[in-house]
Length: 249
View 1 (spheres, rainbow, N blue to C red):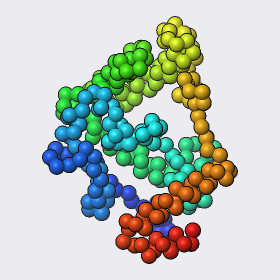
View 2: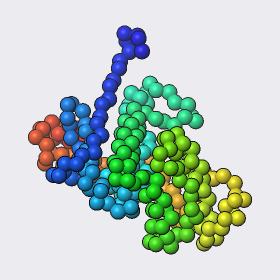
View 3: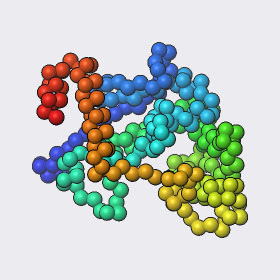
View 4: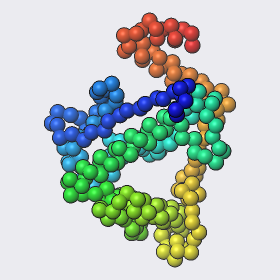
């Protein structure tokens, strides 16, 4: 890093939870030259225990509207220079710069959210417990077994030590439910550890993967791109520049 030829790129962002009256549940602003993500404490206070968990999707966008995790590296978010010049081991997770930005934002969000819930005499652990053990049964009839949850005052490290083994229990429970239409403690106790990706699903096809070589997919993606360009042309003051790009395309 001391080499004069090294280029340093800084990345700044701010996450704030506000008691202001006239703000939406979530807002995005540019302040001081860097992005600020603003969240309404009054909105969070009005949420019930289920909505507090669903804020992972509606406020923080860790999960998209299809229920898919957004905190992953996506090929479309990798810079061309990173692909060309950054070597990654085949067993290493492809954590490129944009992924690190998303991960940093999520860490600030969960830390701030946890502090707000603590001020309201609540905890994220309590809301997860009620969501998993009560809400899933009431709405879907899913007979989940009780899990071990960390205490509010535990350190982040201890919370991870307690919750991570419980993820294995969650997979085993659902796997047993899919196979036998019930959750059997003895089967779970005798079963081997399972990765999340190895768990069974009630869907006929658990995973779908786009065939990048498909001409039909290319047409669909191209049409989406054209619609986006036309939308930008309508809204942007830089219409001439966008029209030139559109014509080149």
